[in-house]
Amino acid sequence: MAVTEERLAIATLWFVLGVAGCASQPDTWYRIPGARVTPWAQTQATCGPLLQRGQSTVIAGGGAPAVVAAKAQYRECMGRNGWTDSPVSTANDPHTAALHRDGEGLHAKIKASRTKNALTLATGESPQCQPGDPGTEICNWHWTRSVDGETVPLKMTCVLPRDGAPRAEDSCRWGRDTAR
Image (cartoon, rainbow, N blue to C red; front, side):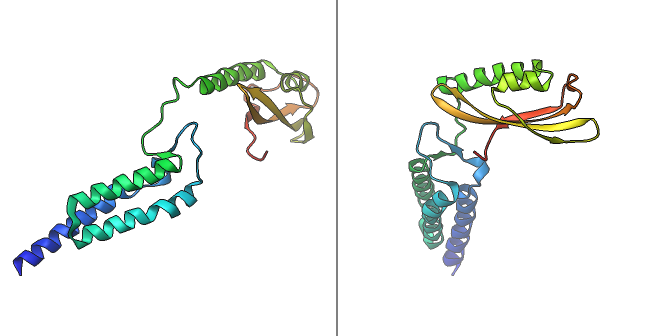
């Protein structure tokens, strides 16, 4: 009887370790640059059962080898779907470096552009504006930039004085246009 209780205790311990060691959240997995990435939910639906089967094997007495095998199969499945649990360094990626350089240049150009006309020249597109607080207007620009062979949709929203005076320094927000 003591042997059975001991095996149950060991199996329970391995199950707890297996669940803790195999469980993963979206914020602990990273996209693999250049890989075809399957959406997170679809990847979890495909790879998640590998962990569940591994946990069942642990409960049945598979021990440490079952945990290791389940984790290895799960990581391999995640990798096939474009995900890794190791942070990916993009420091030496020329494409990322080109995007970063272009973003810094654009940031400097926008920072130096203090009027609606200057911002329009910086973006190359006309804004869509609406009245804001008294004496101001809220303007939105949508444009695209081609950087290292990639078309990047951008948007910018600024609160500008209606009289054409220079804008306040922190009056514009810009970034990728995720709606495009």
